[in-house]
Length: 531
Image 1 (cartoon, rainbow, N blue to C red):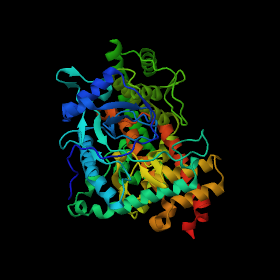
Image 2: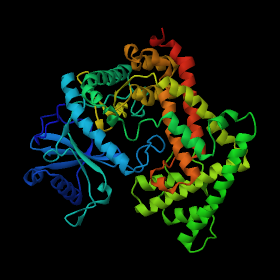
Image 3: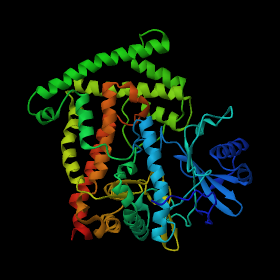
Image 4: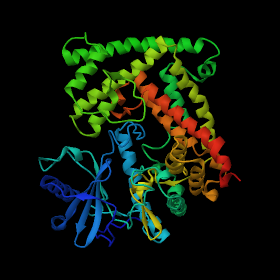
């Protein structure tokens, strides 16, 4: 296999005109120079660099780097913790195995991108550049030569990228949602879908050496890939002391409900013990209730006004959504990591209590709805097994595209991976177009026009009706967090998605299944691909 050149030279590229910038503080400027030097960039070269900080995005730190008349981009991305939207950014356990898998995947991406760009005859995504001799990414340490590194950078991954030309596609109106495909002209959406397809097609032959070596799995995304039917079923059923036979008996006889009740009573006793233990740790006595612990935590670690969310967060104390507050604390680096870890532990107790109360006090109405949802998931996975695989962007929303003289290019290739070929179509395009239609933001004519632009018949083929199976199946990854909360598994607290409660999961599941039904029965029959 060809390797990416280890040359430190920066190719001539045009500045991405869409960025807005601000100047760095002296401390931030000095920190970047120290990091680059420690990563292996020659000191005389580092001294000549000029930096500006991009004001766009909140998932990583992006800096424009000027070197003579050349401009490139430096990214420092946090690979764990609270990222992006409160619910959609699924992170797994954040352990060393995941970290190593991510490093290996990005290694393959660095090799893949220049080859695909060459095959396509232009730079459709930024090319990876060296930080130092042969160094394409650098994990930021806590100290360099005895001096502390800024806390927001510690543990992050620093990488260096070329620029690509162009500007963001124009919105239909200035107030439209920038990540929503329904906010753009259908011709631009058609170009975006076409580039996703063309990049996937061009990457296919390039992947053959990995395929022949049996290493395609190393290109699977360490966080975004589907957990798999067996893993989800075992995690959820196992947490409640059930198996697939019990699942089939739900609503038929009392055996399954008796098992649920038995599991809930056991966990209720464990929960009471965990709350007493935590009360002892915090107050030197075990008399404080979980609500009192929550109230104390929110008073001790204030975060200001809550983030507005279009979803239900159920574990509230005095009207303040607790998990939302901890998420806000973590995302904004508002309090020490020890406080975040404590907040996460309390959140786990709250979610466990929610499920215990549902089983013991409400005849397991919601837990049964969760378990019954596994039955339809089995059918979805059967269809997904027939989906083709390919290289997908994994974050191919419209803001990650630039337009230059009628040609699109993609930004942020960090999450490129080998996955179900239609992941971006399902999770970004079809999902948001149907959502806009069901919300009344666009009419049926516009929805069909956009879907026809996205669902390229010769690419999607017979899988067109089942595109949203991916959207629903990806949500079920979160069910593993529910299972971990019910089991009170403290080993995974730092990797839990703080948005996942029993109520929020079921609300999202109902919403996505409704979209799937509207798409299959109302919109898809009118599409060109269905004829």
